[in-house]
Amino acid sequence: MRIQFYTDDDLSMKINEDVEKLGVNSNAIVIDILKKHYGLIPATKLSNVELRTKVFSEIEEFVKKKKDSEGFDINEASETYRKIEMVYAGKPSAIKAQIGKEFNRMVGKKPFEKVEQIFENGKPKLTISNRAAMYRIIN
Image 1: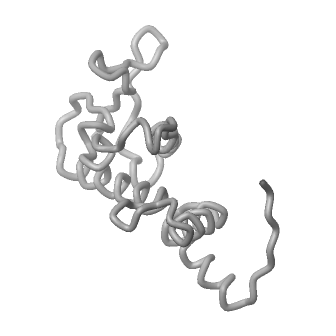
Image 2: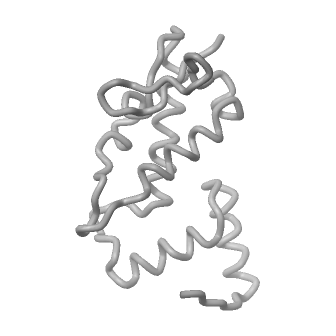
């Protein structure tokens, strides 16, 4: 469903502050707010925006602490990411894949400018256990 609505200046300003702070688009913020309001995200669960923010924060901390250039995947770098269920309410949950793809696009850029994806024979190297893309820290 497509819904169009107009906000006043105060609400627009608040949404834009979150857009800048969280690095997501306004649509994601509004959807999270509406899902929480209608009980589609339990109070004990993180919204997609909150989940994304927490995962990237954990990965950033992992990269800062890890000094060697051994390979790692997102599951190793973020406990929150590792705990994301692949199914939510009986339906496939796309958030884990979305976060993984977004991280891949962020590799080589702030705050992950010292991270690169590992390739073997021109193809992305994947972990054996969960087929996740492998990355390494470059110094």
